Image (cartoon, rainbow, N blue to C red; front, side, top):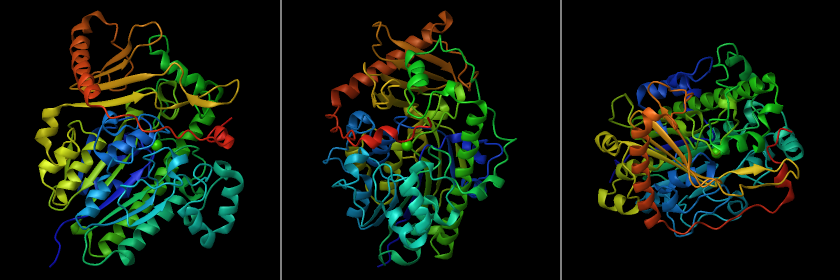
Length: 498
Ligand SMILES: [Ca+2]
């Protein structure tokens, strides 16, 4: 009997901010294939991640829960073994499942040797990071052995300092080729499939993009750095800490040219992602699967790229860090642009429903997720939350040691209507620090209204909503996943520019 449930292709990127794509207003960028996918499908304009850093954000996407629901709070926490990823639910109802690339639902030092017991993948080609500096040997490196041993030798020797990687040997290309091969030859016949192509780019160090991509990005058209000279006095103290102890570099020690190079390299990496996504979508059509496959494209968080005087991601909630592209082309769904707030943990609710699960089961497993197809329910919910729970790593400039912040930083973003409220819970002086932005009149988040007397009523009202919500979260929270902080001293040097 023919199975008429849709196939699912999920394309995941790492650190891709929403405005890096042309269809989200990016200038000077090269994203024709993603722009076309957006024009054919649904483009969500306001998707906010559940956490601004890899592991907790990805755990939310894969489980359909906020941090308190899945227990992954920090970069190196592990997804508890009794949690169930939605790929398992798909496998349970007969989907053939495959992963090519990065997963990172648990600290990488654990995940490199231990699959999560409920990942549900038949094909599992795990690659944390093309540099090999974390996670070591990977499916990508294995592929390079036969394909480009010279590139592999360079990566082994220099890691992220290996320089430009040619298109044909790049991790993004590997993930695309493995996906294409799966679509063409490796699927189990008679079953619908779920395939995840998961790339590391456009993650730092911004130097490993193929040289050929340079001509595709128009340097002069890229958005200029925003608010780099912004005063930090009116901002939560965590921002200053990020400025001084960011794992990548101290931003004030970088020259404007170095920051421009970061921004250029970032968009060059995005150009390669776009090219390779184009190849995968062509292969999908050629295999006659275009009309039967849900295609989703998104990311785990963004990248500040120097805006607001900040680098990469961390204990802050500016849109470049927390808002990501979310594009979904689904059979029978007419093209649209959707502006209501949504979050990555809503994605599995939609996919499981498309795979035939009833609403009661989905609500039992992921009670806070709303199907992305249910526009009314998303509007009715009307908020998005991003929880930072001492998630990120800081570097001690004296010793060079990386660790979580001590005292811990716990902060929550509450986005609702035209406002964004960011609360830093219990800072050193015992009073909450915070930010309030009017995203309608001040979309670039340049005027913090936290101390504005006229805005006191709005602030109190949003604060009350947030506190009620947090109280409920705390009451239902599961224990935090176990810590897998790497013990290898080499870890201390990963990612640093200087
Ligand atoms: Ca990430």
